[in-house]
Image 1 (cartoon, rainbow, N blue to C red):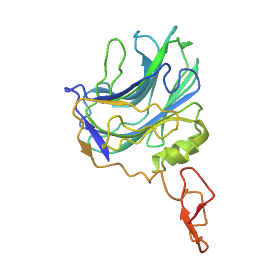
Image 2 (image 1 turned 60 degrees about the vertical axis):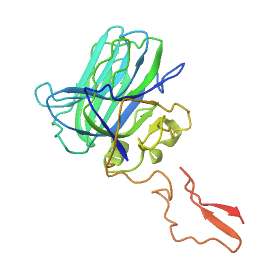
Image 3 (image 1 turned 120 degrees about the vertical axis):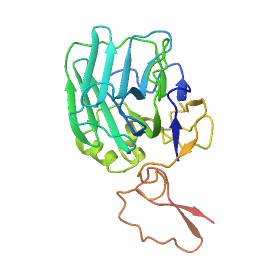
Image 4 (image 1 turned 90 degrees about the vertical axis):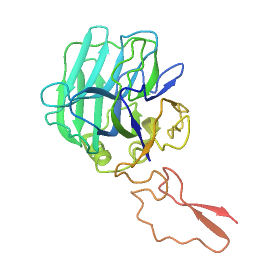
Length: 257
């Protein structure tokens, strides 16, 4: 299940560690969102420092500017990249958003696997001290961007995903099955525990702040079970063995009974 966030209630998820899920180029941020309106500017997912307002990778929606785009922001010493999608998002509709923070001179953003936006200037150098990984709020020393709506399937990679891989995510493939060796944060937002579990294996489960009721999940395939690339769905276990599908495994695993 997803969770419902209220912009007026300080509702967000945040993990504070010695470092955030990513702190340097390249990085990919992605999630599914369902906004209650197209009038405000809201954060979806980001990494930032706790002690400063300078330095972040940020995936946001901007209903408060012309065109209602999804935007990818890269901020550091030197200024800010602002990449905006070429088409608008809609209210009360599940969308997939993705930003690529490629280098000091390149940021890209996508809506539902397309509508690419880019920005290449100025040259942005990331500072140190980036230690927070957040959902639904830019949780820095001066918080901003509280989201209003539903969010799910938040993920961060320490690589630049390809356009085909972004299309897979937008088509409903779980982040667990897209470049898993580079997946640094994966919080599907199940709505059943605090903190929300991080399934990347890096142990950055975010704490829950505010009252966040559960909501219907977006159309994303389960992360567990058969790998979507595995063609041996009909394989049967031999006598005395139990079939056990494994997370991110293309080869079935058997347990001796």
